[in-house]
Image (tube, rainbow, N blue to C red):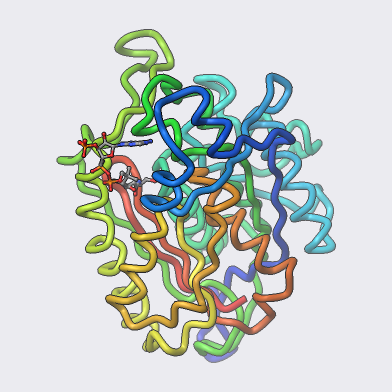
Length: 330
Ligand code: UT7
């Protein structure tokens, strides 16, 4: 840890990258599989299309692709990395952690690699763990990856869930840098995570190694999740903004988990965040669980919307329930 008079350790976002499966499945394609319409999906969710992995594309391969792009964007080598955290609920295997498979593919043999499982909140949880480890001097260059292949755990006969999700990966490289202890300095300013396990059966997978010995399928009481979403998300966003002494109007970009357009619009309205500041990719990506935030972030950085120095607010809610938010200056 550093002496506050000379500065504090900040986890600075040095680069980002993302990867999507080749195949695009539109709402019209899905309406040939289950009893649904493009109109219903767009009106209730905002989703128009999603990417679906083929057999050669897995959580590992998508994660490696996103990680390589993030390292190149940061101007760093794989050898600079001393920690890899992968947020996923769809690992290639029950064990070892997908992070170790990605570590091997990148040719890294030092440091540590592990997975974090907080479903759709996984990326926010992973950023929180990475930031804590950097601030305590346990890592100096961290790859934080959100990678998912939810298409593998969907029940493709259940129209209430299969229309919502897609596959993909996003990654950021965090570098420990010493900066003045100011809200103007770059890096993660505040992280906050929550969970409430009483709601574990509102969004879950009905299988697992220790119970059914199968992978299982995703099940969700959508309306119940929706009911809690705006309250939980706006609550935790308010917490991080208050802790950083930041007003909603100061936030340049709101990069949320991409579950439902109506949830996002309800949240920004409740908090008084400008609607133009939402980075929305769910129309093209659907809900990619732990990958959705880094995917959206990468899109908005690469198309020039998010610039160095901008204040960015990430948030997510998912199965558990888990939820959280991270405020960072890019
Ligand atoms: O990423 C983790 C967090 N997840 C979320 O945040 C998801 C939160 N939930 C949601 O986004 C919404 O609840 C959904 C998009 C899942 C559903 O929207 P809704 O407005 O809550 O719809 P509903 O579940 O209340 O269903 C309304 C009607 C039902 O028919 P009845 O009972 O009114 O006759 C459903 O059977 O829509 C029907 N329905 C569909 N119709 C056409 C449900 N799914 C479909 C479908 N196509 N795909």
